[in-house]
Image (cartoon, rainbow, N blue to C red; front, side, top):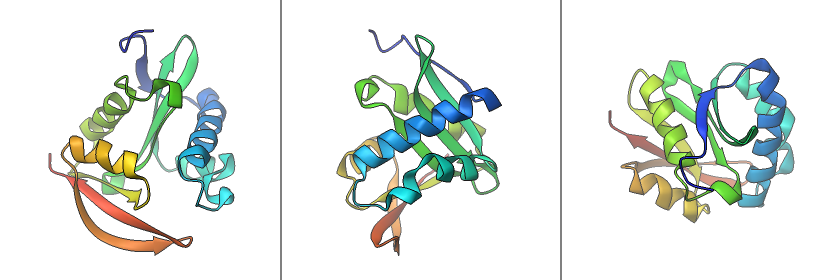
Length: 145
């Protein structure tokens, strides 16, 4: 399957349960040190209520998602199915969210998530303040417009 074999669109209400399932699966696989209840379907759906959610779709299946809390230009979620990582899905979702943001995009990344930190650094994000939540350290990242 080529990298161009996916499309990005706004998630509709009928997409959110499948997006939540992808979130739960990928979040728990990539950040097993976090409490599972912070990475389950219910957590995603609760946050998505106040966010703009985009999905990447390939062959009728959701292979990635991004969720933006627009009032703060904060990228709350960016998750891509493991089989689709490295194929441009994450970048396309991130750029879609950045285009919708009203200011510089920011996000939090887990300190231990080296792959995500490399991904964001390669797209021009810079590390800022740090904090601790649920027993794990996060780093705020920002990127200028």
